[in-house]
Length: 488
Image 1 (cartoon, rainbow, N blue to C red):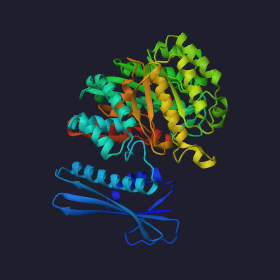
Image 2: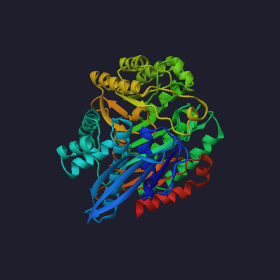
Image 3: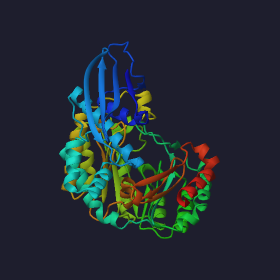
Image 4: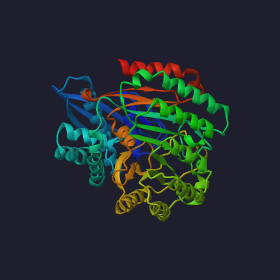
């Protein structure tokens, strides 16, 4: 068991993320500073903020083992700006860094992304460059935050590639997300709020009616913005009954006549028949994603993917036949039992298809996934790290360069997910979402809308409930919250 005392209780989750990077523990319990360990195998972290002088402070972390002080680390910081958010950022940075440095010292382990636990390291780097310059940004990332030089170079290459796409974004720009929380089956590693659904299921009709009602109620907001991209994701949109999906696409076409980019996830190859491809083309969907995750059949069966490798190749070839020339393919590195050879073979087979983009995910197993409930999972994290490096080199060698990136909690090896694309095929939506450079109106169960205030460096959010039944009963309440978000 791990115990924690801190005066900055509002940073509990961030502190726990730092600890879990180094120590495998299910629970971290908050206690007072006089807590005494009763089990000799338990750990106790005590964090204090000490005022050294005017505007000068120190975050000190002490680790106790067997009720004896084992290690400590102190991080000094200044608060010169009285602005509320600036003060919080300074405290948060110092506290996280002091825990990271202590744990690195204690475990003798260096993390590839240093003390960073947030999902958007590229956004952080871009903002530091904007406030200071490239030289300062590199020094802060690699010397202070302890990011490896290799990961810094990856982040730097991505933000440089994103610049012309972000440059076209302004305060009138808006992205649209429409979430479809249905799948033909639930993969064992998945923690998204998807529902197993059969085509023709009445739940699909009820959900579509709710979606249309939610979108219609926001028409006055939508008309004030320029829509950059529309992304219909999930879940698996192509698991909808074909008549339901066509009705949705027809509605979207009328509700958003102008759009620079239009993506529909067709993530499960077994759902993508000729009829679906013809219909997607009819409604001018320009970008689709067909996701095998791996091309090792035994692994597909092990993780609950109800399709074959042959079905993936067949779906891809038919999509090309029907004129889709911007297809993304997702792979997951670190699936149970897979070796570097397996991962390399999957990527090589994918690259042979000459896709416009490939996304390499590192396995992240959340608490809601079946893996954590019913299955044992063991993977050598060094193997995944080597595979990720191999994947990057192989993609770049074949003209697929990194253009967006994000990280998640519980990622194997504390690594990252990276989208690779050929020049001119970068997804506007993916960049906008990860860099948070414009607002997002998001519809459906579990969807999160954002209003971005670039001049104030502030983002306000309005999440929809994840539970499908609750969403169906309350979708208009959530629409009203979005109106308030974009009108205030």
